[in-house]
Length: 348
Image 1 (cartoon, rainbow, N blue to C red):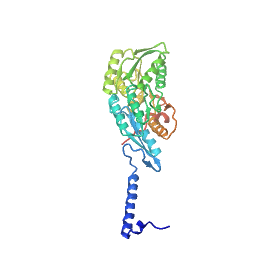
Image 2: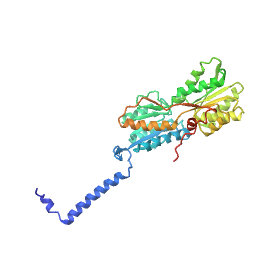
Image 3: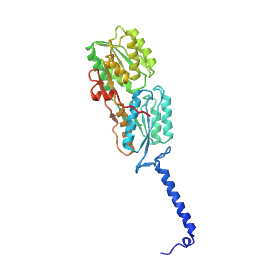
């Protein structure tokens, strides 16, 4: 085969220059991929021959221990998969719906591969989830559902209604199926806590000698507010109340403090939902009679694992349960229960 005339005319220095240029190009390509860093909106980054996914995980808030455990689970899944970058961000307060909406919109603009979201408001978050779907970004819901899940790929959560049923049955047992009960509700619009409340009330409705003497009071995530509202309830009903159920961490702490301040801790049967070390200590002292537990680490883990499964073409179940359990003073030291009472937390 004859050489190209133009190639014959290359001098030795010209050949060297061409080789050097080719080496520079190859080196530049290697440098651009060896770091494994993905730019915003990138859809072609790889790690070890696998596509690298960038997934936002957005909790309702970032101040409570529960969410740090969800974060730990999400990072566990990312480490196990090896090709996932978790971008964790959420409102400081679980009442900041607009902040959460803005965060989701920001991640849509960044063109992430997927969004795992714990909605603050079951109705208010629907439009932004639809915007994500329209932009080609799938959303997986965890912890608390939407009233219309049609724009989502799956829902990873505790069976919150069943958690309320568990609390109701335990309360009936503690009271000998008769007595006066207070339910302290969480802010309106949170699907998970509303399911807990419904399960509790519908269960106690089966016991004709148990009376709900207050179930209209609501509290946000502000523990100071929870103490104030709880103290007011005890001032009104303290000499008549036999049992109390609170439906989330901040309400548990507020009611516990109010009971302690009024020397009623340990005298009134008290069940909470979700735990932290302060509540475990209270149960050790018999100032709490039960804590309904979720598995927040598993929740974060399953959210990320299932999002990646969807991105790789797998079909997901519409609802993925992470389980629920009841810790009591009698079983709290069992290994499985102890792990749920003291779940791992993400530490930066």
